[in-house]
Image 1: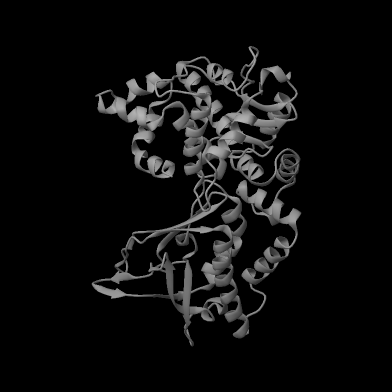
Image 2 (image 1 turned 30 degrees about the horizontal axis):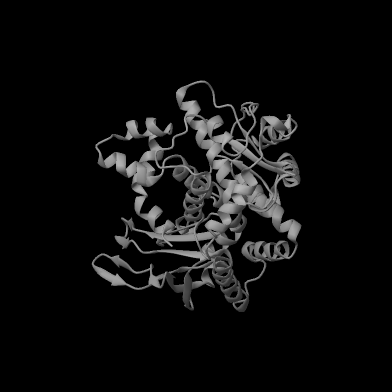
Length: 421
């Protein structure tokens, strides 16, 4: 992602911040100019607008951009009435994805064409956005415009990034969708408590899954289940199986987490000696494969957590929340358990991590892909589909939700591509 600017003098804008930063802008995503557009029937390569609102918006959303998960930010939210392309950004904890979507304005008649997607590392994304913000601030300073809210905000962000603990807090607040510099006491206390139980990406994904101030109840549940007798949750063989899976399917540089999940699932199936026709009708039957005792059982109900993976000296423990008594609840428990196993297989270093409803997040994506391929291998699903079986019939065969089967069929090409050596 690159911002190319050509500053214009003597703009008629009344606000000094806008007047000083009017420019012709070209924005490149994946080396494609996504500011190309039609105005009427005429093609234009750049857009002309004050860049201050874009820089200010990106500065104020900085911690939500890099701390948030399962959220998407569009440049449209910063346009302040000007025509800009619908460039969307989201971060899963490792990959920063940028997509330019087709977008049209009616008055005047302006149409931006659908562009291309680009995936950056966090460092690349930070550098690109920071360079743009600082370029705008430099233009303001050179024009004699000082003390803007964007400049003050950016100064504070730079100071926070120099302090590891402060940056961690700011990103945690961003995971909750909050402004770290205006966080209420109760939310700050939840972040502090969560930081004692989780760290790094695990902390961010835990908080990103909290909805409507449920973090306190979620934290209480984690502390409660970890105090239960160990035989109810211990999987004696899981850690050694996970380590073996890392040898059979080592991670690849730049690989998306879902791709790792598919490959590790196949490795674990191989280690367990599972055949294509192997089926699991409950999570307890699958748990036995990883060394669970006869006392292995679900934990109490809680909102916004499906399962918890917790490593201890005696092995890996997995707590699956009680999903209820219905058939759908039982398939939910099986999938949640398999996702937690996937977290251990994809990220074998000792950890504590939750399985939750967040979609676009590093560990959640890996766990979902792992669980899908572990429980309903795509080759077996395709074989049944080609034999004329319907979606629900296949789902019932594997004791999974029909949505999982649909996704396996939709993703068949990328699953095979990910698993091809």
